[in-house]
Amino acid sequence: MGTLPQAKDRQGDQTSVKPRLDSRESASHQARRVKVLADKAAEEVVRSGQPVALSAMSDAEREIVRGHLRWRTHLVARSEGEDPERHVVVIPI
Image 1 (cartoon, rainbow, N blue to C red):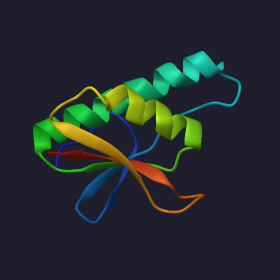
Image 2: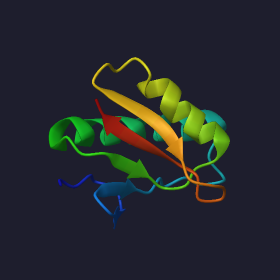
Image 3: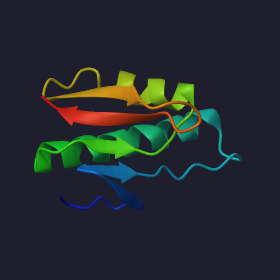
Image 4: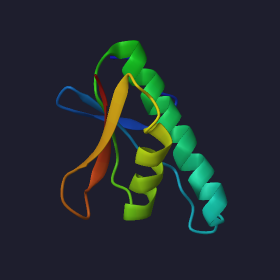
């Protein structure tokens, strides 16, 4: 499995990507950063053919990721786990 330019952990056969968000950032700036993270995860999924698990996110951040990736026909993004560890997994289809 390849690497993303983000910090990551291995979880089984999934790559886990950790977002780097700052509470001082504006909501729109955080949304842009989450979208960039989603794009990088999607690129890794397409390149490797393996699922990529992002680290735990808020409900709003998970919705941004799922909405941002919704148009992509070669993958699906879904939330998994229980709070506070609920996260998005990007899966090739």
